[in-house]
Length: 259
Image (cartoon, rainbow, N blue to C red; front, side, top):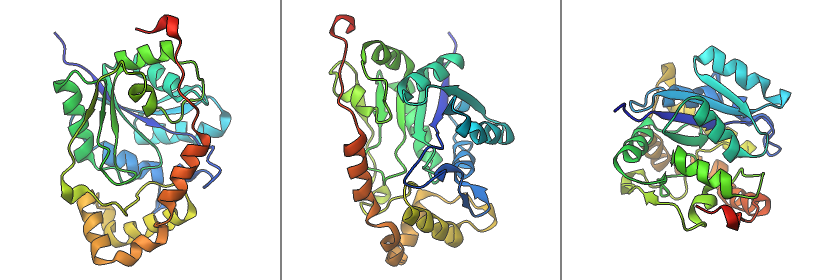
């Protein structure tokens, strides 16, 4: 019996209105998404990396980045993120995948591997690490479970998709424990607002000399030593929550097709 195949699927678009084209903004000489790719490539339990973008021509630069960085690219639905992820996973014959959005350039490969190993060792449909700082917590998904969700969901705008697993009552969720040294309630490493961009540029200026792939631990140590850095984007987490609440749609399922 062959070993299950695990991919890393990056959800990526260039449509952001809060910070235009944020995932290709330059940070320390590279587009933000390339910093993310550099880190994902360090994970030991990922078989394939895929940038999952849309068929909209505005996303063409992401296809070129994938080519330059030696990773795969899948182009699918503009708004239906779940459909895009599913079709990408099926195209690449994945059993499981780990996912995060492209605006998380500081993702730590340590957590990618923990998610991937947990997908192998449990019967979970969705594996989460919810206590990590914003911009650090990837999700792990069993492709078979996502296929069921795409059959029973009614919405076609699914950018915020975790609730499709948690609110149906039909899927197995597994929350990985996060040791206290990796928890920091005030730290936000995702790129959503101009203030986040300034914060990340400062972090790379402090820690990214000579292309060093610094860890989450190094970031936490830095902001603990220099708490003034947290003031740069400290208000952005609350803004992000308001944005999600404003743009998120209610979850509905097709009753006749529930599995």
